[in-house]
Image (cartoon, rainbow, N blue to C red; front, side, top):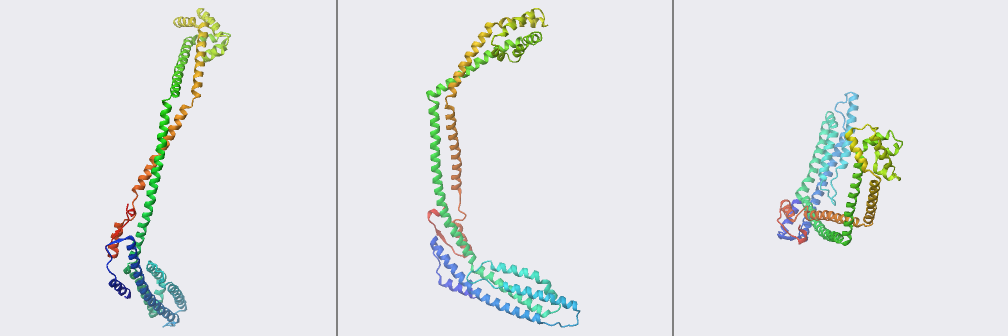
Length: 420
């Protein structure tokens, strides 16, 4: 083929490339190799297009002969004649349409997969026209065989497109060109990654400063006199709350002891409403009992017990009577006075606590520090991911491709930033 002579002529003139080549030098060499390959492809494609055009013309001539062909046996039934004529017209139309698509690729823009597309067209045509051809073989054997021969010859010629492309190594050249471009793009991406890492590290530095600032402020607050006073108030509140609960529990114990008697006395007294309130909640009832009516009720209930009106067992009766002797006016007054005092002190302490927003300040600082620490963790992972990113292609990969696909040993000299 003229193409291979052309390549041989180029190879004789070309000196062996230097083993060590920069990316720029290698790209220049690869472009020149591509130019030679394309020139060779264009020469051979031009010859092949001429042969295809000639074969198409022969096919059209044979189609004309088929269209005008007369039956050797004119005595066949009219039905068969119509059947034959319909298949002949259909067959001719399919071939004419098929031939319009068999032109060969444009010399100026060579699609490297063109021959693959053509092969598919031949396969589709074979499937669509097989029955028409088979029928016409029974009527116009020589004409049908001639046309079939033309199609087979066209198929052989179109397959040569693929051979020309493969032997030119244009695909390999362009693939390596793409990988060189990827390598150059990786240089840009790596610079971007380095810049992104630097920015992220600065962000981490700033966030860590914020974390340290928050923790320092928390330390300042928790070691301040203000915080000591606050914790003292909390402790005092705890003591006062316990004291209040203790006297309320003691009061409730007194009333739990006389609970049975109160329930029985409720049914025989005119003060049953007040009695019911003390049964349900003695402390609340006492606060609502402005005149301390309970003192009078207990005295009357005690008399009823002594007269056995409440039907209590002796042991229970003695215990309740003893308890009632303690529940004097002085007892209730002392209880109310002590409780009111504790409540007032507790209210004062709680007011002091609520007016101090020190816990909110600490909570906000802790939350801000935690948010920054979480953000630092995420950013550190992002930096690690960026550092672990590898180039999809390395200079070693390209050197191996060059040797395998182009039979040339090259050592690419890369700027340091090309390398991961």
